Image (cartoon, rainbow, N blue to C red; front, side, top):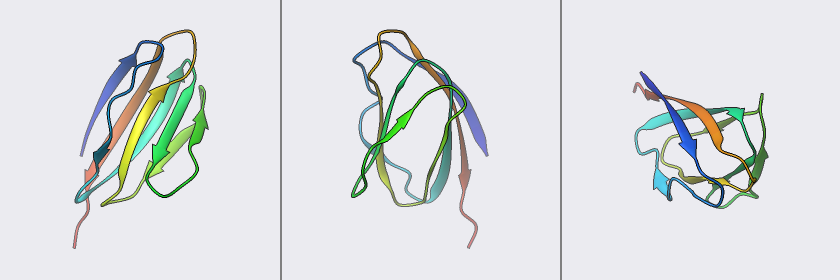
Length: 80
């Protein structure tokens, strides 16, 4: 398992990427934005909101607000 803190400036994104063999939780601390998960309607996020990204899922985090979007991600490898 690993985690980290991300700070995104307004209008920026982390870029679409896949969770591959991992699952991920995104926990928003500050700002506002959206989590885009391929094949689903975007999740609008703000402080206190957490979004789960299942394994093998392409996703992106976008800052749609006027302030920095800060969030923690927690990633864990899926055990088979």
